[in-house]
Length: 88
Figure 1 (cartoon, one colour):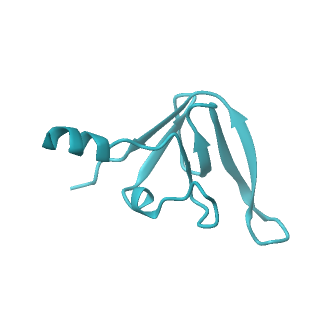
Figure 2: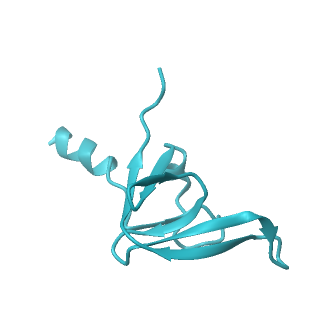
């Protein structure tokens, strides 16, 4: 029974956002250092992802919109979220 609880806690949600104002924001999961592979390439500028719909939203440079949020672009493709191993 404990093994099932541990594996459930290691599952990532289908959709996750790093914006605290988003309904898909989850501070507990983000604190565990989530990594994203998009089309097999590691991405470090992901603002939001959705595995089932197959897209990521990436920041575009340092530009911001009128509200001060980073400008993003939405790209379609295979999304693989994972927890990065803590460096010992």
